[in-house]
Image 1 (tube, one colour):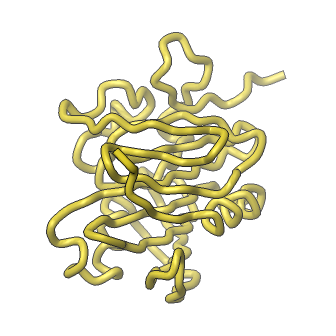
Image 2 (image 1 turned 180 degrees about the vertical axis):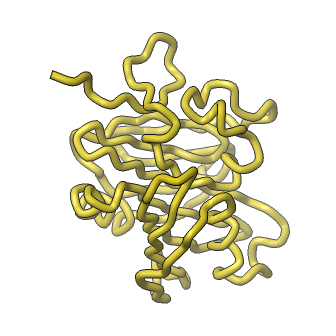
Length: 203
């Protein structure tokens, strides 16, 4: 039997390391700014100036400083593989999909169009074909939802992206999977998005 695919982890000696060409993690602002392709499989070096991020698995709440957000329960077999710089990321060994939620607070968050913010997530992807685009309310705020068929380093991938903002922060919720496995993780991702809510911590 072939060894199960391995996804990136920051824990020393973790068993989940996926080869770069098999791991279609959306190139968020963090990935584009901090990772060379040769480092994508490790995800261990990262940026020098990381923002410490906590994840409460029971409450499904992530916090980076005073910025917090709640997400829905992905359920099993999703594994937490990233927890830093305002983001949490999960990998499904069963379906090979990746889910990430990230908060980025910056001065121009309210001024930039949601379409421009979405395009920033697509830097590095080629042969893009938009499958669906819609505007909706998420946590009471305007959100741009896009489903895009694209390629990363020649690998076919479907990106399911939600981009919204609140109180000077941009929130990206993303799901990436190979076209043949996209449907496997979609119900879990929809629960994840449905449970999203942004908040400020009490500290």
